[in-house]
Image 1 (cartoon, rainbow, N blue to C red):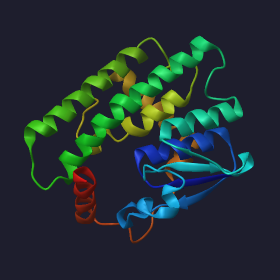
Image 2: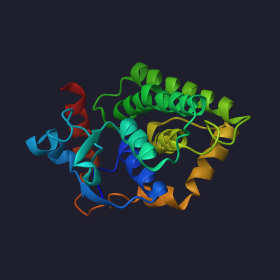
Image 3: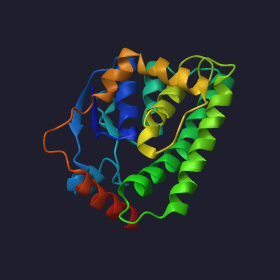
Amino acid sequence: MIDLYTARTPNGFKASVVLEELELPYEVHPIRLDNLEQKEDWFLKINPNGRIPAIVDRDAGDFAVFESGAIMVYLAEKTGRLLPPDPQGRSLVMQWLMFQMGGIGPMMGQANVFYRYWPEKVQPVIDRYQNESRRLFEVLDGRLADNEWLAGDYSIADIANWCWVRGHEWSGVSVDGLANLQRWINALDARPACQRGLAVPPKVEDEPSDKDKASYARKMVTT
């Protein structure tokens, strides 16, 4: 059994979608980011960085894993699925996983903060992150022109990138003219496991308002 500590964010979805795709049994522990539960001492023992998602593998002696990409690799290796065993195939998946972790995630994350939450509209900063996100989308589109999936067969690389790219409208980044990328997004949207993963954890009635989210986002960026 896997204990999943998560919240409704792109990185959080990466873990829950993989768990659903791999059909692993898991128990969800929602973390209220607005209440800073991820900074409490008990959680820092699981993830010293105080971020979600994190997992604890009860079947492996309560082994804890943090960082969304590391979680995806751990679960794929645990089951022998979504990550090829051969060195070249594995490397290809890892390259596109790192592409998301080093590019798509950070750029879209900053676009979200400054486009949606930051109290002052600093247009050059917004442009910087939106334009770079669009450039990275074009890289994905080029890769998908001759490939159904990013790294051979469907893999954790597709899941990781999709969990972020699917929210392009929230980041204010267009996918117009990127037919290959749109085809790929739609293909993942149609996967039942992907949809189930997006429902984890479920929405709650007292989720913070946009104003509260803006306050939280600014606090997290400036501390």
